[in-house]
Image (cartoon, rainbow, N blue to C red; front, side, top):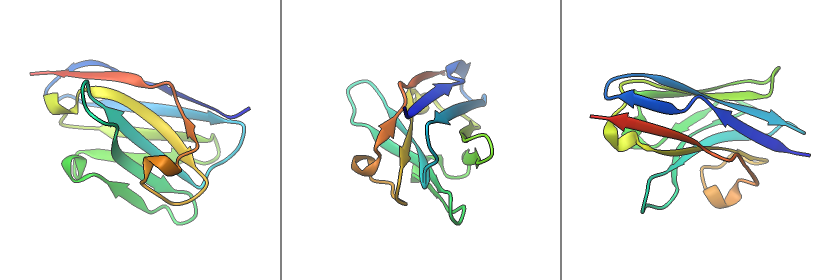
Length: 120
């Protein structure tokens, strides 16, 4: 059974850092991604990393602040978030796809989400 479990969310102040973790079980995936959804907004792509070549993708608003990584030996993915801003407040979801993509419709498996709240 495939399962993705996120952890590491919390309440922080603007400028602080957080590291989200995603534990994947059941199989390995071509692409691991992070998405977020703020209240009243659609789910938004944040970052993705492909297994085959280690290529990374980021939404413009987090470039230079967030870093996605993965440990293939542990089947884990991470999202290091630095210099957090109030507009980063959202539920963050880990997702996995069998292809290289940033399209949420092409991610088959999703975690339950972890709340990140950034106060000003």
